[in-house]
Length: 199
Image (cartoon, rainbow, N blue to C red; front, side, top):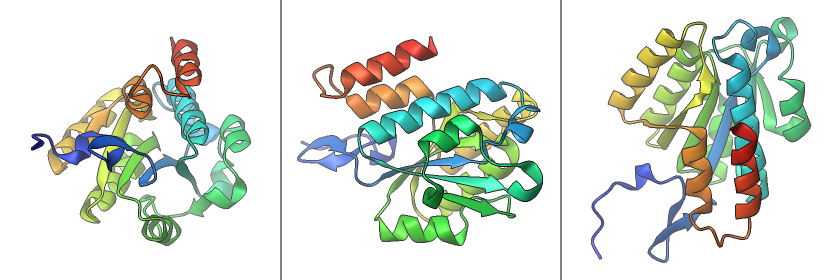
């Protein structure tokens, strides 16, 4: 069967003629630190949606990383995120671009092909990160309702530009249901509960 859509529109990778392989997908959580998020439009919504994605990725034993922008001055990630992500998967940075050497090395070592990006700010760190990941030849998803900027208009401009570059714009529920694929999935009850918690 010939396929009409590019694989970049699927969160999972193709396996045995279905998009069910989750081993090549990474969730990258960028700089969700309270000192930053408190100044963002929809900062709390971004954190809550990100937490749902982290929990889903953990449920499926998928890969995830986080970065923190200058934590010495801006503080650590949200406590709720720190409860979910192990310390050895969190990297401090000064660059706005989260495609730092540690993240790039992890991507190469784990044969990552698809990256879902959440965090802040949409028009600065997220914009530069997604651009770099696309430039590396990766398939990148911008989870729009899990990304925040000081103004929503700033985020929207970044999202539009990144979509033109080749990023796929999705939302949290789209991702959760794409991961599960089937109501008979062994983790679907947990996914369904995550969705209910967001509504």
